[in-house]
Length: 284
Image 1: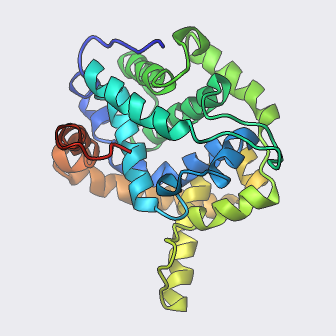
Image 2 (image 1 turned 120 degrees about the vertical axis):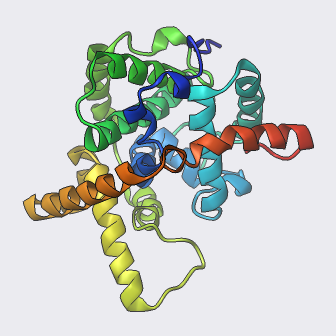
């Protein structure tokens, strides 16, 4: 399997503007999950998953840690960290495959499905960059694509499958829209994630409605229109203005934060990974 060899740890090479958007980029997390699961093979692989400990609907905090660690390792990890994390993920993925009762055929080792997941992660990184930093210059463009290669080739996707440049990626993304479809079962699975709800956590009804409204605004705002339509999430100019105002306020506060705060939790996850390796604790 091809693993990206960067010219140095990406976090050290990226401009402050790139590193400074790391933590705030987690706001797009629910939208990115929706994009990934919009491919039926990925959606049903998650909905029907036999890996109880990795189910996002039942263990959202643990699943979030695993996903964020994946992002950190893919972008900044050493070859040893990548190899250890890859082995741990592969052990989990070995249990994810369709059965005769599954409505679609899937296998977590399918490089085409893994390429789609990596493409969604990369698309999310670029969208967050545009919102919180602006249009990337040449240096940022290079670093973003380099990070995309790392995200896309972390597991079973060979380097040659990843688009050669941004124009090729844009073409791949548009072509992939023909394979996007969210049915009722996957949509029902995704709606609590879109609203940021945590299983078994019950809040007073007025507070829950307020949180649902804010979280849906953020999630839907980060989704391209095709995915909003698949999720049947309404969007209009008024909602767009609300989203833009909220993002500007968050950006203002984020820009005032010290760098180590803006880079949290990614700046501690690799240390946590090393600790887990040393102590024999599960990595995923």
